[in-house]
Length: 68
Image (cartoon, rainbow, N blue to C red; front, side, top):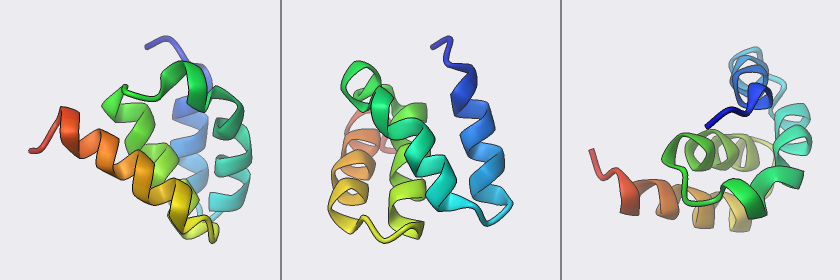
């Protein structure tokens, strides 16, 4: 997946700026859901920024594709 925002969002989550990462990734959810790397970081950002419903769906998608 060629989404440079994903690497930036990962860095933001690791820096404790999950809300910023979530806002950055949310517009891409429709097009990139199903990609386990996107779903993982989107889910983590959602969880850490008080969006548990979105986090649950994204992390379940990531696990369905890549259970390891």
